[in-house]
Each structure stands twice: as structure tokens, then as C-alpha cells.
Image 1: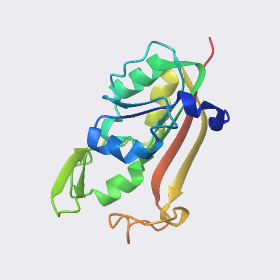
Image 2: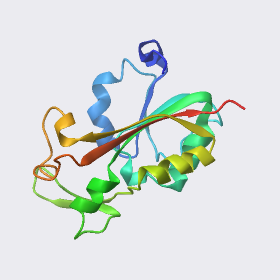
Image 3: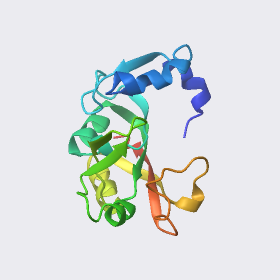
Image 4: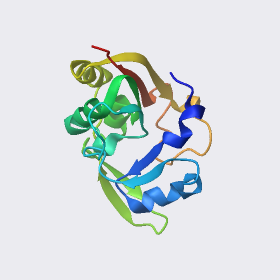
Length: 173
């Protein structure tokens, strides 16, 4: 993986929500741009991006995203993504749809958002068919995490994976 410190002036922070992107304003003088757009339709040319990071990408983790990441990633470039573990999602969401996740805001409002989780074999296979090679995969259990833990995870982690982390590299033809 490249040394990310030398790329900070080329980094673009993207989110579909202007409100969410405001949380990144403190970095606006350290990155190239803050961009509001859908991750499945990014305004970049084909094969122009050296690295893409998608953290907790489950709201848009679908075939359209995988196609877009494949389109914009240059040969030799990489995609690092984290997703809620499909194993955890099946366990936690047994009474809810596997395709959505409920969040409670500071004001107590409940918001349902899309959440697309798949077994790692499906994610890896889909990206391999799009020209990526899996460099590294790691599943993290609750005890592997530090810092404040969401109430959703409390009492539901144990030795079960809660986060899946993937590092893919775009093959060079």
C-alpha cells in the first residue's frame, strides 16, 4: 500500500450527504476537495484514481458501486473498504430486514437507511470479476475495536465478526 502522507494534497473526501461531509470540514485545507455526490456516480474519469477508501459502505454496497470503483480505479490502484459483517448483520437483524439498518439520532428520531451486506466470498468474487485482486481481508470482533462502542453492538459481539475489512488492488493488464 502506498505511503498515504504524500497523497494528502490529492485526496478528495466524498459523501452523498452535505451534512455528513460537514464533519470533514476540519480537513478542508489538507485535501484537494470536499465533494458531495453519490459514490455510485462519481465525477472522475475512467482509470484516474489511485486509491479509494469506503468506510462502513453498506448503504451503497451494491453492483453499481462495484462497477463505479472498477471504472475509476487505475491499474495498480487500490480500494480499501469496511462493511458491517454479514454474519453480525444476520444475527443482529434477525427480526429486521437484512437490507436496512435503523439509526437513532441525538433527538431520538429513528431513521432507516439501506444496508447491503454480503458474505465475504460474494464481495471478493464480485470484485475479482471486475479486475481486482484481494490483497488482504480481516474480520474484526467487538473486542478488536477501541473507543466508544455503538449500543447496537453491546452484548452482540463476542467472538463474532462485526466489521469486515477488504483491501483490493486493480490488476494491471
